[in-house]
Every structure is written in structure tokens, then in C-alpha cells.
Image 1 (cartoon, rainbow, N blue to C red):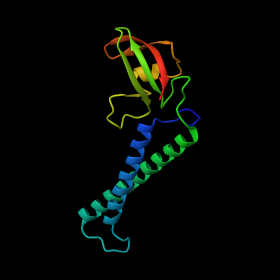
Image 2 (cartoon, rainbow, N blue to C red):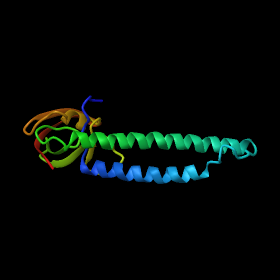
Image 3 (cartoon, rainbow, N blue to C red):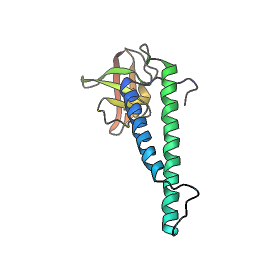
Image 4 (spheres, rainbow, N blue to C red):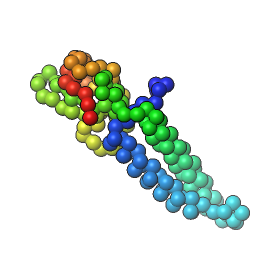
Length: 154
């Protein structure tokens, strides 16, 4: 992961904000089911259920922390670059068959968005750091491919 905080697209920001809201709601629900530590514990099944809920709570707290940190880092990073492809960029590319497509470079594919290309996918990774006019070769699942970066922007 780069030392500088990476920007994210508005779509990714909205997805993370929604995930954070959902996580906080789920955390409230799970926390409400935990017994007071002074309460009498029943049989082993009750204890196992209680332990599972405590583990769920830790998992939720960890993810809430990760998402909150990522949103704060994105705020510090500012908007995605417009002079070269980076995480958060919107890129129009032309394939060798002449078709064009506009995609956003994202860091996660949590959102089901056809235009989102993750930075660690073959195309997304190959595009990083390139500028309009560059020809970019990458290894697609169906074999070697090439695209020309037509433009960058919002």
C-alpha cells in the first residue's frame, strides 16, 4: 500500500459510507444481545453463543475502524488525479477492436458497478500511472490485450 493516502471515487466513498452505516446498525443489534458480565451464564450452548456474539462484535469493531480510517485518508488525499491514472480516476479507454469504454479505477469491488475496475485487476493495475494517449498492454483472462488511454476526468 502506498505511503500517501489514496483518493477514492465518489461512488466508492458513497459505498463505504453506506457500509459504515450498516456496520454500526449491525453492531448495535449484536451489542444489545450480549449479556451483562455479571449475569449468570446457562449451559455450554449459551456460553458458546455468547462467545460467538463477542467475536462478531470484535469483527464489526475492526471493520468499522478500517472503513472510518479509509474515509479519513481519502479526505486527506483530496480528489482523484486528472493528469494520470490513479485510484479514483475515471478513464476512457479504446480497445484494439475500436470500442471504447469509460471506467472508474477503484480499490474495492464491494459495489456492483459495471464501470468499476479495481486497481488490482489486470486492466486497473496496468492503467495506473498512465496518461491520455498512452498505449497500455495487460494480460486479460482471455489473453494479452491492449488499450489506448483516450482521456481522464470526472
